[in-house]
Amino acid sequence: MKLSHCITHLTGGGSDGWDVFYRARQMISDGYAVIELTIGEHDIRTDPSILEAMDLSARQGHTGYAMVPGTDLLRDTVAARLQARTGVPTTRNNVLITPGGQSALFAAHVAVCGPGNVGLYLDPYYATYPGTIRASGATARTIQTTAEDAFQPRPEQIEAAANDAVSLLINTPNNPTGAVYSRPTLEGIAKICRERDLWLISDEVYDTQVWDGEHISPRTLPDMKERSLVVGSMSKSHAMTGSRCGWIVGPEEVISHLITLATHTTYGVPGFIQDAASFALNAGTSLEGKISEPFRRRRALAVSILSNQNTVGLVPAQGAMYVMLDIRATGLSGEEFANTLLDTHSIAVMPGESFGAAAAGHIRVAMTIDDERFESALNKICELAKELAQNTVARV
Ligand SMILES: Cc1ncc(COP(=O)(O)O)c(C=O)c1O
Image (cartoon, rainbow, N blue to C red; front, side, top):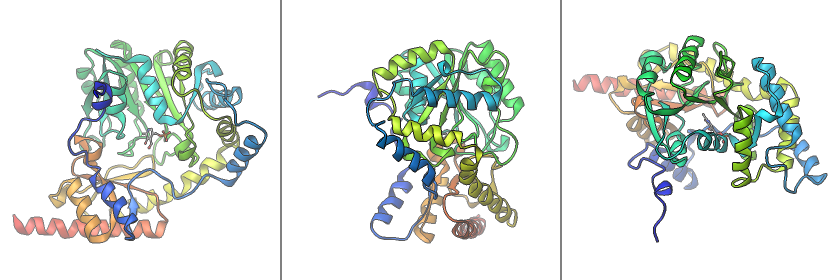
C-alpha cells in the first residue's frame, strides 16, 4: 500500500549523525557502563510537590476530557507569566495549551505554512525542526550560522533567504549551540519579519536557563506581537519532559484557529497534568531555580576546564542545558570524534552534524550528570582531543 509523501519525506534521509546515539543506547542495554551526555533529559526528576499536585488533581476527578484550549487556570497562569516576563499584555485568549513544545512547534507551523510555502529555520537546529516544517506541507529552507559568529544569526543572511518564505523559526536560548540571541540580533530579525511579512515562530523552551546575557522574547519588539507565535514548555524549566505540557502564545485569531486544529488532532492535554503545571508555575521561581542551578554550576565547570587547555574550543555557553565544543583541531568530524569517544572512553555525546552542517566539527555535551562525573567526562574529552590533534600534526 502506498503511504503519503508527507509521512515518507519528513526526514531528509541519509546519515543524520544519530548513529552514535543509538549505538550508545544499545551498549547500555547490553550492560555497558556508558556515560550518557546525549539528549536533553535532566538528571533530576519532576519535583515531588508537583507530583503531589498531579496526584491530588487526578484523585479529585480531573481524569476526564479537559477543555481543548487548556484549563482556564493554566491559560491564565501562562498568560500572566508571559506578561510579567515581557510586559506585553497577554490574556488566556492568546494561549493554547499543547501536549509539549514539540506539538506546539508543529501546530504553529500548520497555522502559518502549507504546501507551496517556504518555512525558514537556522542551522544548527534542534533535530526536529526541518521535519516539523515539512510535516505542515511546507518546504523547509535552512540558513547557516557560523561558529565564528558564535552562532548568532546574521540578519542579512536571513533577508537573502526570505524572498518567498512565509515564516522564520528561531530558538533562543539555543539548543544545540547555547547561544542567547542578543538584542541587536533580535531587532535585525524583527525588522526583516516586518519588512518581508514573515511570521516569527519563537521557540523559548529554555527561557529559564540563561547563564550570560538576558533572554529577550522577540514578541516584545515593536509590531511583533501580531506576527509572533511563542512556543513554551514545562519540559526543560520544570523537569517535566514526560508530562507533555507546553503552549503557544500568539494573536487571538491564530489561537482560535489553533483551538480548532487541536480539536481535530490532540483533543487537549490531561487535566491533572495541567493542574500540576499550574501549581508549578505558580510556585514562583524556587522550583525552576532547583532545575536550572545544577546546569549553571556545570556550565561554570565547563568554562573553567576548557580554559585550561587550547585544543577544544567552547562555543560561548550562554544558556540551555548543553555545551557545544569545537573539536576541529583534532582533524576529525564531530561524528568521528563522538564515535571514537564512545569506543575509547564509553562517553556518549551528540555529533554536531546531527544538528546540521553548520555544527560540523563540533560535539554537543548535555550537562545532565552529577558534577563530578561531568568534570571527569570533560577532562577525558579534552585529553582525547589533545591526543588526536597531536596525531594529526604528526601525520602532516
Ligand atoms: C529547542 C527545543 N524545542 C522544543 C523541544 C521540545 O520540547 P518538549 O516537546 O518536550 O516540550 C526541545 C526538546 O528537547 C528543544 O530542545
